[in-house]
Image 1: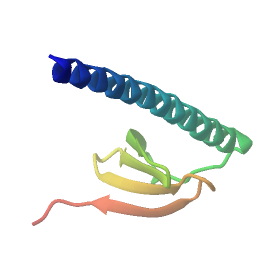
Image 2: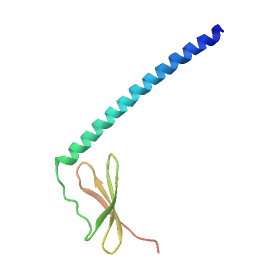
Image 3: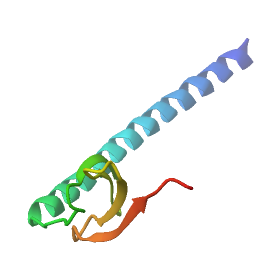
Image 4: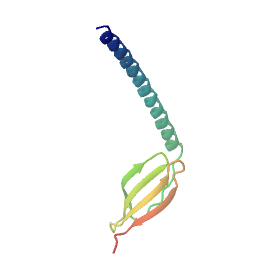
Length: 102
């Protein structure tokens, strides 16, 4: 009986430590995410940059990561392009035209 109660005490203490550590980790990750979002917002609002697109093109989809943006574009003739844009400068890094294989 004494072994069972000692095991339960250790189990409860270990569970409490794990719960506390998980809570601290969650708060730390939320704080890091908030500071990353604030930096991205300050960079985005710092300047307005013109982004040249192919004539008649419109943005269909945007994919974002820490390094940049990938824009899926469609022009008036329904041709599709991928534009890679540097997140910090707003400059277009490359423009790829998507063509079906023959």
